[in-house]
Length: 204
Image (cartoon, rainbow, N blue to C red; front, side, top):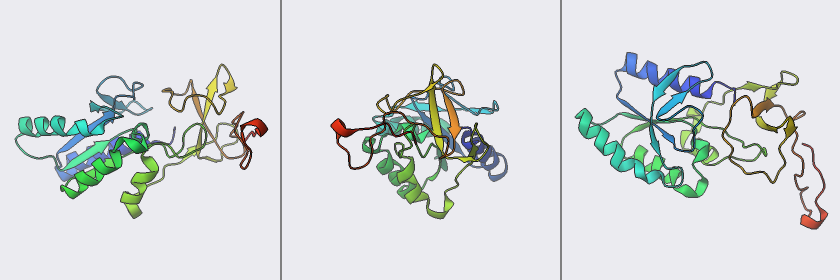
């Protein structure tokens, strides 16, 4: 978060449309309510329209895509997705993207690599395997020290959220802060090798 990932995605979409004359269809999971309905939006205010599809059943993209292509009168060349972390690993999103690639579409996608627990988030890490050397890691900076920040620190009522909080809670700057490894805090995180009865507080 706060790394400019959506802004970069929007810039790529605009560049490909404006200078590459590419026809691009944009999608996002229905879970993403922060940007508003049928919209992807950066913190800076850049935005684009987007079709919403189910985060648990992304295969529903097919009738939507075919209807859009029918209305357009030709195939899209590029399919863009924002907030891909909301597509769970078992949702079939990875297979969907692979199918789209095999079907001749180019893919643009952006998403968070880690959730508020500092653990791999949804389909994002799997998509890096398809991206190979075309994967770009955007940089956020820690709100405490200014170092590179890999983790989204969830803050609830001024206090870091505990490990057993729900994985998904949509929010912006009022809920999340970028944190580096030193300043990332996660109360209640189980220590490796300890069962529940032996869990201790692990701050980082």
